[in-house]
Length: 300
Image (cartoon, rainbow, N blue to C red):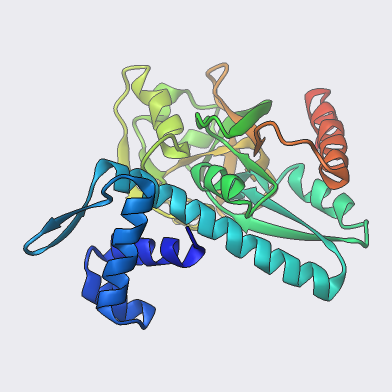
């Protein structure tokens, strides 16, 4: 099996049409059709259901598509990193992160890693599920997120639980005292989009639902900065991790919550069973120190 066969398969699987896939790959359709048939014979399973009006992935095809993408991503990452290392003679260390963790210890970790002149640190903003996929594909070396993802190829370490706070409009009556979850449920909420699988939106809205509280989501936004801008515009409140209060915004007041134990986790994800190289050992040492400082109240 060659990488080109995987590329052919992904192109066909994404478009579910041999003609369009052939055009995308700049090859004739008959060789593409033969290559897919050969791939199926080599695997010993059909990947597509051929229908008069197009194709449909079999159950095996759906699984193989995910695996093929990961293999191709890992191959591309290996080529790109090798090229970069050859050009700069540096070791590449890639970090995936969700934006809300970048207002606390993570910048300190990056700063200390960058003191090593033989390292090139690459940062990728991505959701936790994307981090898991990127770890498996070799695109990143470590990820920092908020949600648990069950995957046998990735280990996750809970670094600490971080309090949630409310970002509310300055001058609002809700700033008079630490609001309760019940009080917040009576105000318009600015939330983030839901997505497939565990996510921050599910975590925060679940805090209300488990208390039997209904919420009024007035707007969904894709990023934290937009959410805070809407809060400053007096459109509503949003829940954010405590680290975010270091991001000062005019018209926004950060309020601790009256309820106890309203937390979200900070989780580090790494490849399962991989022996850490010298760079990873250095990163783990720095991370352990930063987490200890956080837990001991020496913040950040």
